[in-house]
Length: 317
Image 1 (tube, one colour):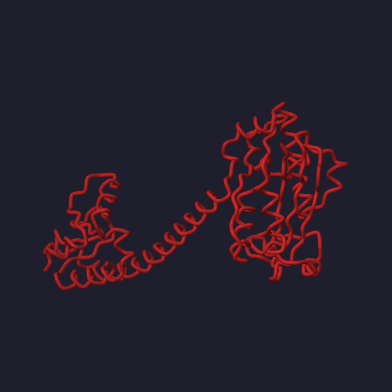
Image 2 (cartoon, helix red, strand yellow):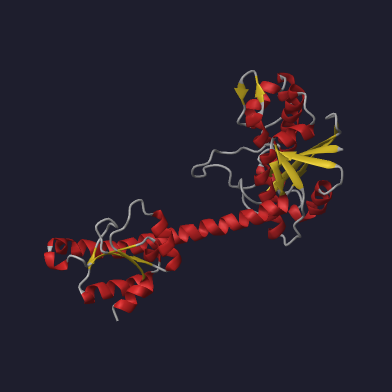
């Protein structure tokens, strides 16, 4: 069994790989090979002056990377390295590195390849040394690795960061008197199957975009509904309109065509738009599924009627 520790640097911190560094060791952590593969990212560098992100300074000047071939030239080397048998792969925040690799695979229209990697970052919180809890690779590296070794390694040089990961992992194993497999088994959240993680990440991204889109639609619908109920506020004191107060669910506000029709019926039939569920006579929801969600989510029994949009249309034909 051999151990592979790897790290990736990108031209903008999120995509376009410019460095792939790795350290290959035997079971006793003797270094078999240490290598840094530099690549032309085929895009400008964007690592400083980014909103909400710390500046990142690479070891080499930017013009050095443009002297090398781009990612597709190193693809087979990286793939063959990471898909060998009898190999355990480790990294720090490996979910990011999985994304970096597969983004460039897609960018250059190259096949994705599967591998399993173990995240040192996920192991740090369960490792205790002298009553300290390590939450970052850097703090663990400074405390666990002798200064003379630390001084030989440069920050944000991919093969050196891979070496840092190896040294920290080795220190944890030695200190705990564990085997690497023991430490892996004690940290099930450290396991990342590359293709499985990538597929789940795509699903999470789509779901995030869906939620963001729904939130934007709901906000726009809230403006439409807000204009109506503010217009109707004087009517709340009219005793002749008791029993006609209407409010709508959040999901109803996401469907603008239906909401516009609902508003039109409210105006034509003399209903009163209301901004709260409590105190309303009708709660209009989008569909049966939305009705179930709203019913189960209500903290107190609702004294009014919960109607779907279609049910409300039917009784107001």
